[in-house]
Length: 110
Image 1 (cartoon, rainbow, N blue to C red):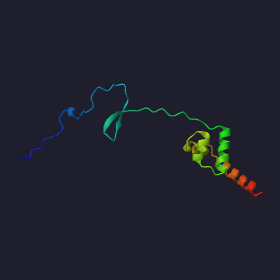
Image 2 (image 1 turned 135 degrees about the vertical axis):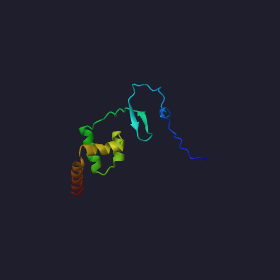
Image 3 (image 1 turned 60 degrees about the horizontal axis):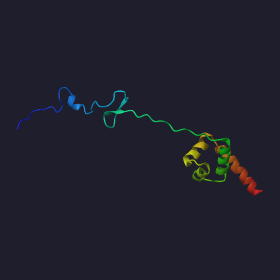
Image 4 (image 1 turned 135 degrees about the horizontal axis):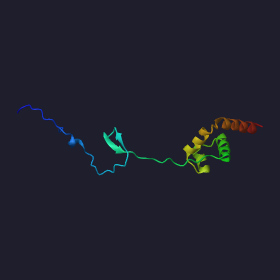
């Protein structure tokens, strides 16, 4: 048995090309570090954003002031709990909820 180095890679590197040329050239391609190959770029379309009306925000303030959870609020507005939490956070309603909660406490003590 002799020790002879036999390279596994051919000299012209054609053996390394695993991708067949059946892919249309108009598709943009990006390198994927996971597989080490070129992969097509997938375009995503963002969802349509629905904004909160002033009356819905006032209802949200009142509901949160009495201690209703975001999950329960989502049933009233036909939205997700994350959407309700995002509406409060985006419109910075924390101060308004705190003030309304204090008003309700004062009314209850009178």
